Image 1: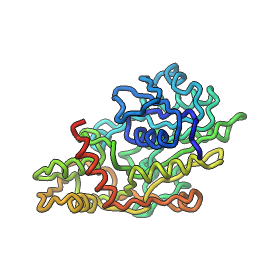
Image 2: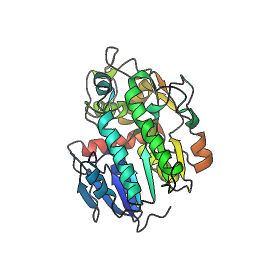
Image 3: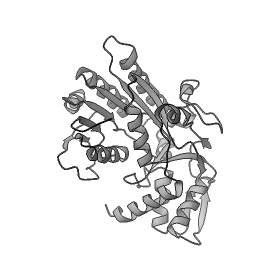
Length: 321
């Protein structure tokens, strides 16, 4: 899709995915409008319109979408495993408001297309088998993700409603990511996910180097550049509605992720200790990438070693910020 000259809202322009998406769209010649809330932008965007808004308020959502061609909903209240376990409702009300009000505002403003970022955590458990798109509503999400998973599912149903169930529909794209990692991620231990947390521990040469859980949990990791490729490939389709996994299609244990980090960063003889008392989420979460490969021509190309190498380099260069 040619984004040159298009006016595009990236809601959540200071976040991990929002920052990387905005950088890509800016390079493609788009006219950007970026919303921020309580954090400043992570990168410079010359010429972009930056609005400090609270997207839990309908009037702020209306300001955000006015006059834009496309909307990418990257704004979300997120956190790591410890916060999810301790306060499972923390994500619900803010995100339901953001997603519902932004979709409504976009529809009222006659926006051309909206992209919503869902989550692989919304799927029901499938054991060691990769989960496919058609299985989203086959059962409840795993208990630890039950509130957040249903919040994402509700937004997906809203997207489909706007696209397929009303007289004057608005095209929507739902992207279901696996575990995305890379530059501009959240590296604060209080809210970071496993890959960002391990990256920081390796860069800081922590000794002992603590790993939460047994290290045997399996995750599908996708590097941020690959994820943006997949998201934009999905957005370029002419379907009125699409829900698609954007993932690598390969699983790695936490132990393997750490070992790769140690190897590519040259951290030898690390005193690694697995803390079984610390919270993890589910033992295995794998996602099927067949639909994206066949329908979008998308495949993730960045190897785990290369992606982690780039992430380490970025964090080391930017950790003071």
